Length: 165
Image (cartoon, rainbow, N blue to C red; front, side, top):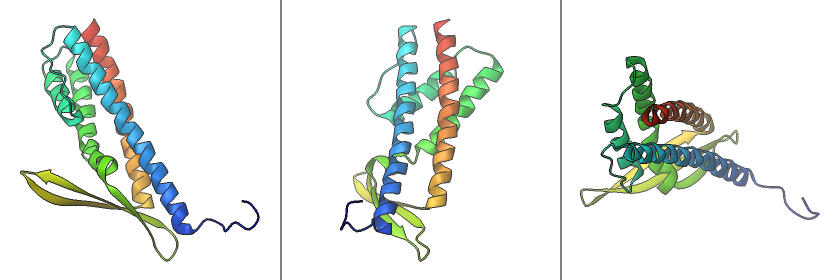
């Protein structure tokens, strides 16, 4: 800090921590979408009827449908299905990271909270969406997201090996 500069305010520190958390989560979502896309591309190369759609959620739904009829042992199929279901559950929060306006809040002990707001448009009508997390809840979500990504990445890697065999 240069002479005469004020130290960062607690709210500025919280906002920086929230931005960093959000960036790490967005990176995991992007990496998962890439893995899903690569899996669908390989499935198409190997003769599966696959339409590579524009939206990530559509591609995930298509991959889930594709994997239901693919070869592999019952244990392999169950592991893949479980990873896809777990990922789908955390992926439902992706819109808050991609489109949500973040508001940083501090309590009296300077622990931060983040409020993520966005407007979803369904059936031609706006719906306000809000997700509020404490710093602890944000950390727990990131850990869950990272675990689900690791499981998904592993299972999709194995799935691609089976497709190519």
